[in-house]
Image (tube, helix red, strand yellow):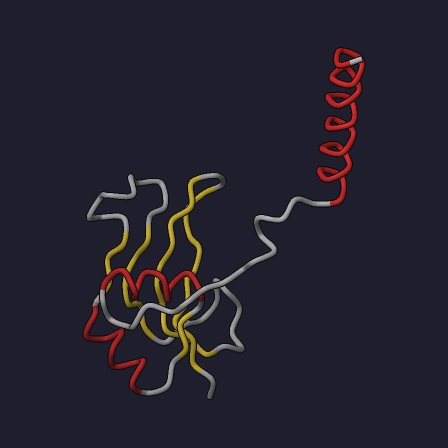
Length: 120
């Protein structure tokens, strides 16, 4: 059985509240889970202690059994010092898209045209 440590969403519309759960990867996001390991409230301030609460011992237990954390949960575990920090690299994230590149080129042309007229 492929195990995941992931978030299960609760709360009402536009007021999310998540449970950190250990579940079978084949189960739906908010469906059946094996054990609740903690909570995550994204509405609280980032420096609030109540934003992420986890039972670290149980998380370590599930990791030792082979459970794989999702990306968001892995970040929580890195912040708590449970797992080693993983190198992330997305070099294309900072590259502007096609439309933004075209706009920048047009703007550069317009800026260069008056400068050429002034120098003549």
